Amino acid sequence: MAVTARTLRLQQALSRELDKILDAQQRALVSAWVDAWDEVAPDLTAALLEMLVAGETVTRAQLLRSTRLRRALAVVADNVEQLAHDAGVRITGDLRDVIDRAGSAQASVIDSQLPPDTDLVAVDAWSRVDDRQIDAIVRRSTEQITALTRALPAAAYDVVRRELIRGVAAGSNPRETARRMITRAEKYGFNGGLNRALVIARTETLDAHRDAARLGRMAHADVLGGWTWMAKLDTRTCPSCWAQHGSVHPIDKTGPDDHQQGRCTALPTTRSWADLGLDVAEPPSLLPSREEAFEALTGEQQLQVLGPGRYTAYANGTFPMDDWSVVKSTPGWRDSHVVAPVPQSGGRSSRSAA
Image: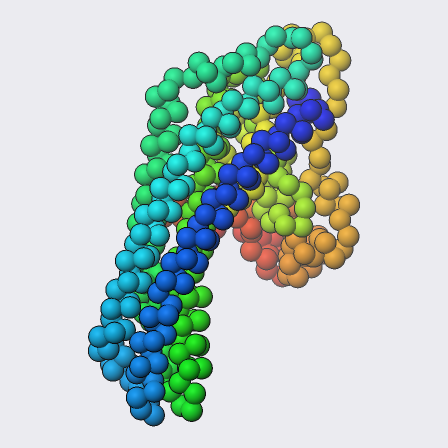
């Protein structure tokens, strides 16, 4: 392959476009959750204060019998239900745009790895892809997003309710007690639903993007040798993705199958120019080497990537980069590559994860 400066620019531009969509999703979801909590928090606070100022202590049973608190909790339940529904609608609304951007970009990225004026890549290939294949990606992603967001309301509501009945003794400051209870209910319950929605949005949008990239690659199968796992080699990237960077995979395999919210991309990789029958000297690839990039980091930065245990094992030679990534199976989701555990003293890490 001849990954050029243009290849890297195009891939980075595609990543920036995707990031804009993901950032817009995040802003919309956060704003909706904040507005919904601002609506219910005053009623919850008032219901708690009504009970807490009535006596020295309040039991959990007394709280749960409060008509006013039950009404406020019913509003919480309704709001979380609506938020989860709207989150699914918001995420799925971006799918077609994400898919079209990813699929259509493949031709330019592939062309950038070939000599000028070779005419081996049809830049309009995406427009000729069967709509039924694109619709299948949209349908699969929509079904997955719908299934995942459906579970949000009950889980978030249960935590809100649980946090509201923890530590209910009024003591000498019922207002402080109410404030603490409301804060915990928001942080661990209500915003727990938000955090899960954000993970769903990013992960499933990324996977739709990758499905479309695979479809776009298949339109140019005659010039491709596969795709290369491309990670952003910085201190925010996990050891598993560092280890996978540069690995080559079959053209028809969807990926990268990294962890939830992973930032890695699949770089379509041409066959060698000689294999393509091009009598032109092929320049060296400009794809950064994972080993050289990691060695260029300071010791403090390497520690930031690996963490203390893995860094010590790496420095001791018992945790080479090839061992940093393992496959994890998750019920209801695809297999994914995650960070390998710290190897036991004197040994190498396990190559799989449950």
